[in-house]
Image (cartoon, rainbow, N blue to C red; front, side, top):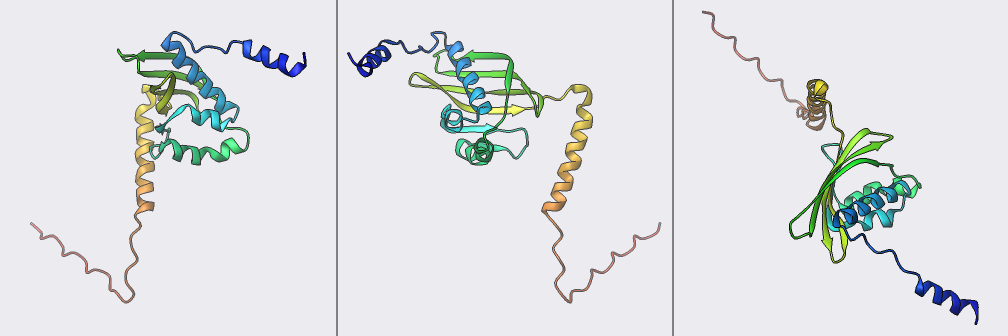
Length: 185
């Protein structure tokens, strides 16, 4: 017997790991592998965990991406061999009554964002669970919320000023006349 047929026989006889029978464990396994794929900069594996119409919500208010938009944005990170590293610390998973939809929230340990939170929805496509939506957030302690919301408002006001500059006056235009003074009482 040659080694090739023997090897094929051994490979054929080797059981493939089955998906966990518990649907919550299966969802957790998908999320764990998804996070590991990012840490390993395995772009095909990472994006293979999304549905075709998935949405990723990032920490910035402008970050609402379809799967393909998110993939294009993150391509430079994956290409350089280092994407990001999110380690789940605690996770809660809930399943729909028919067992085809799961939603979750997870506390994350991240080197760049600090303590973070992910939440989202997975749907069952055939035998596989796929991420339909993921929302990454950075929880803000209530004790400093007023300071943070004030800074966000200041930032947004500054951005709005930059985004809508006063158009230059046409050449030769005269400045507007001053408003008449209010009558004295």
